[in-house]
Image (cartoon, rainbow, N blue to C red; front, side, top):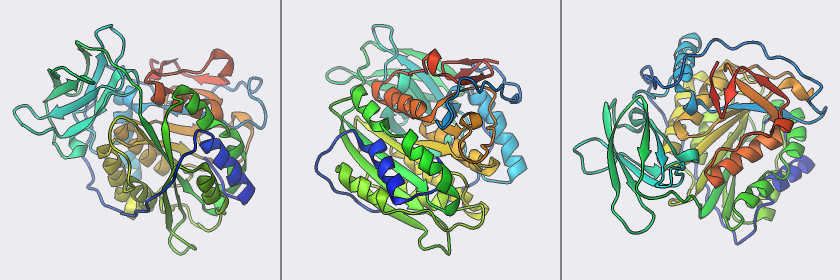
Length: 425
């Protein structure tokens, strides 16, 4: 998102994120910055075709409604070959650390009915070992994208995947080669009906985040209401982490979790945009604080939205990537939202956090004419829609287990050749 908080704006943001449910409450506050080693280069899947360098966007201002914030996104897990090249180039240019995403485990699970099987519990083991190095659930459209090296399992050539039926029955076991997408046929069907949603917002509240946040709060109104329609019986908890930088009134504030909409709204109304001064902010420390929260385990959704226009300081960039790694271990997906002013450093770190946790990188665009200019991302294809539509589709996709694309009438502009999240140009 973008620029700062004032009380009425945050009230709107609250209702945007919160009109899902209401129940008891209670939260936990936890802050734990951490550090990560710089990682080797990434070997990626050969199933995705190489991509050319990004081309300038073709404007179509007639489709955009003035005053409606517009955005696009990239799902780098579906475009790993291109992401690997981008990651390697950016590391050399920016001199920033790189997450170790080598030898990924890539699979799509399909049920006995032939349909993509989301929400199937899976474990991954080194062949011949008793304990798994990863336990989680297949994601949207039955996709599994796991990076053993980033989880401490090393650069593996093969893994043993076990898919566990929801109820009675023996697990299905299959060996997979890393670095290439596999189709896994299950003897049972998938059934993604999440039991809960933990939804946390990590928001930069420095002064540079002020002007667009007033628009974003209005655009994001109803986001959770849309999600609620996808899974009306969800048990929802909300969380908020806000941050600025060293020398400001605070560096990181973690409010923990609550089930009460009114409490979340109160937290948001209490914020104001101030401080900062230089480009980097305490993004890594804030992400580490959010990753250390008491996220629920089991069959549910754990989503973290990081809204920012600046990266962590170079000397602490490893903290940001280590926080993303810890989130991945807990099954927490990180969705970055780059606001106006986002430069290459912030994009580089936010995209790495998203890809290794199964999230997406979202970014504001200039199509609406709202706020300051928005940097063009280093991707070769995307679709522009209203931000409200994009975030709503992301939430509905995660909760329904199937990827939901924008209706043609909602698309403001298309860059490159986009097909269900994959760049084919």
